[in-house]
Length: 281
Image (tube, rainbow, N blue to C red; front, side):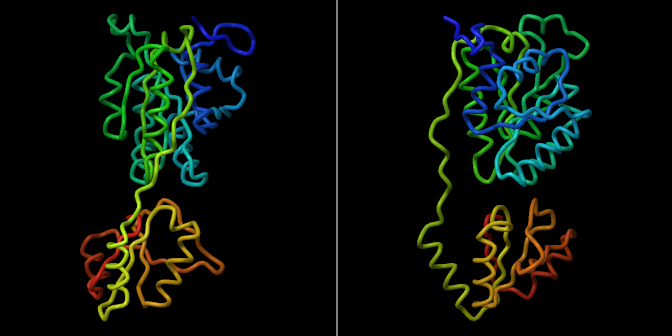
C-alpha cells in the first residue's frame, strides 16, 4: 500500500528520498538537474524542509557541496543529471574527497526499463562515480530507496567524512512509495586507546623534538586551543598538511605551519624532529 503525502496524494519515491534525507539531518541540496530528475525537482515543493540551491554548472554544485560541508560540519546533497552531468562535477568531487568532506551525491538515471535502448546520454555512471566515491549504489525500487538513503548518509558521515553516490533511476523517483526511512543510531567515533595516549605523552615529555600534524575538526574547533596549549608546555611544533580543508586563523588563534608541497622540501622541514604525532591526519 502506498503512503500518502500531506496533500493526500501518493508519496512518490523522490518525496520519500527527500523526507529521509531531512530525517537524517541533510537539509540542503545543490542541484543542476535535467529531465530525468524533474520528479525530484517537483518533490522539492512538497518537502519544504529541504533547501534547494540551483547551480548553473555541475562543477559549481559539487564545489558548493564541498564548501558547505567544510563550513557547516555536516553533509549536503547534490543532484546531477545522468553520467555526463556527474562527469562535469568530478573535479569538485575529487577535491571534496581529498578534503574528506561528507557529501550525498545523487545522480539521476534513465528509467530502469529504458536503459536497454542506449539513449544518447546513457553511460557507465558507476564507472564515473567510483574514483570519487567511497560508496556507490544504484537504487532499484521505491521499496529499497529509504534504506539506500540511510546507508548513504551513514557512509558520508563516517569520520572524518566520505562521499556517497546514490544513482536514482527516473522510475524510482516517480513511482508511488511505500514508506520513507528513519535514521538509525549515529556512527560512533573511533577512540584512541589509553595505551596510545600514554605513549604520546611520554614522547612529548621526552628529550627528543616532537611535531604534531593536525587535520580535520581540530584545526577550527576547541581542539586547536588544546593543541596550542600542549605545544606551549612541551615545545612541540604544530603543522597542518598543505591542503588543509579548513583552518581558523588570526586573532588569538595559534599559528600553524603548513607542510610544503614538494616531498624533498617536506623532508627538510621535518628533518629536525625525532617524533611526528598524527592528530586526525
